[in-house]
Amino acid sequence: MTPRTRHLRWSRRRSRRNPSSRTKLCSRSRRDDPGGSFALVDDSPNRSGLRRARENGAMGVRVLADDAVGVLVGAAVAKGARRLQKAVRMVEKGEDDAIHQVRVSCRRLRSDLKLFRKLLAGEWAGALRADLAGLALACGEARDLEVIAALVKETVHSEDDAEHVDYILSTLTAGLEQAAARSAEVVLGDGTATLLRTLETTALAPVLSPKAETPCGEALPELLDGAVRLFAREADKLQPWTQDDDWHEVRLLAKRVRYAANTCATVLGDEARATAVQAARYQELLGQHQDHCAAADALTALVADAGPERAFTLGRLVERHRAARKPVREEFLSLYHRS
Image 1 (cartoon, one colour):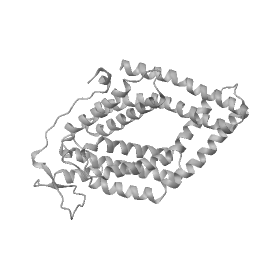
Image 2 (cartoon, rainbow, N blue to C red):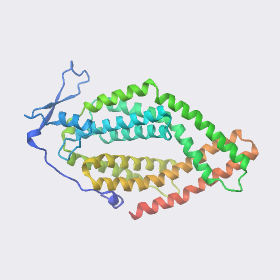
Image 3 (cartoon, one colour):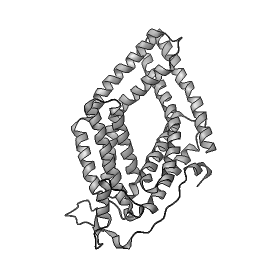
Image 4 (cartoon, rainbow, N blue to C red):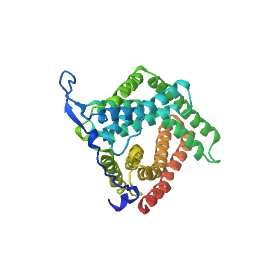
């Protein structure tokens, strides 16, 4: 690894599969699977192969280093389905942070599917990722406005005109309430119910490629390494003057590393968890940066309808958030380059 990824290293844990539980993949017939995907065939005497292990993984049984990595695919989808179902119930009950948890659940599961993409066969994962992305997008505006409104409150100064500040916060809050209602309608709609059923079914029998037979202890370090290297490659390019969008992209990559490391930690243990912790530190700083960028953009959008006096206050707030990016960038770069 390069010096930039030293802080995210973990040991490659190699293991041998138990020959008595050897499994193989074979093509299904067109009648059974028109898509020509793969069926899992267990030829072990005691049926301890990939199919049963995969089903156990989907039911929450611990996945081991000797298990085929396909087991973890099913377990990850099952866990993602449970996480999303819990978040949907929070929305049904009107609980705080519910819309945000739906969004997080969708993003986490999309990240897992991306992590395992080389192990998957057919088009099912792409379709699921698209559905999850659509649901996350439907929750995005409400969550963004919630964060922006809270951040604006924190950055208001005593010299700011109180009436103007009340107007700005009221406008953001009204937008938040409308966006939250739209989000809840989507989350509680038929599309989400169908998505949850699909996830539950998929978790029990994900269509996998032959690579899914590789033991977890052998496959997972390579998969996690790919996410780490991609993050490091883009983070190495960041400079204090780099465009906001590039900083945002690195934040997403840090989040992907954290999600991937947490998923892999179920098998790889403490070293993968340490990778997740380090990625979370980066994500926290990059998230602060993105929040200030989003706040500046949202406040700028209010200027057109605000009138000249309120526009002046908005302008001051916008500049305040833009200025707040600089120390966050410096803190991130310092942390990243000394790690």
